[in-house]
Amino acid sequence: MSDRSPDQDPIRTLWREQAADGYVMPVEEVRRKAGAFQSRIRTRNITEYAASIFVLIAFGGIALTVPDWGVRAGAALIMLATLYVVWKLHTMARAAGAGQIDAALSLTDFHKGELLRQRAALSTVWRWYLMPFVPGMVVFLSAVSFSPDNPAPLALKMAVFLFSLGIVGALFAGIVWLNRRAVKALDAEIAVFEE
Image (tube, rainbow, N blue to C red; front, side, top):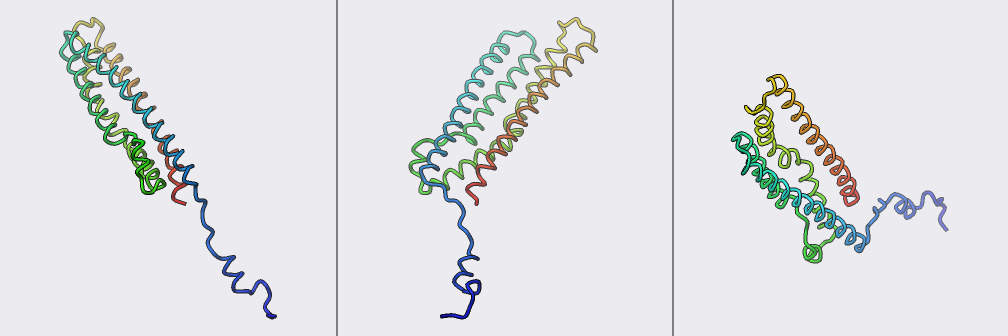
């Protein structure tokens, strides 16, 4: 029998001081989360594509029917921005296919990579999603506000232009705010895989 107390036992000390392993999520739970995440991304993108079709049709109609060349130019710039955003959405933030999930060597690494990819896209949304619309919106709103056919005094035209820019600015700020919230939510999901 040893004359050491249980607190001095080197085996017990080693056992007490060992690093505890973090929680390991079961593979089926990761698969479910990855599938649900890709489904959310797919739904978001389909909604964005549908909105883009609406914007292209609406501003295409304006570009073809309104006689004012400033309005036409603004509408055309907005259409070009829409096409650019659709392209960026597809290249940066598309959903992964079911085959990619099934073919992943490590489902955990795949899902974490997808979370990081979507986070990168959302954190820069102001640059690739909003800024392309700024030139078209400024040209379009200024052409509408300062149209020679508008008999309003210059001060009123300026007030309408600034008010319209304010609405667009508030809309852009709301989009940035929503995307920052989404980035924080993704950060929390990513943190689970980094523990």
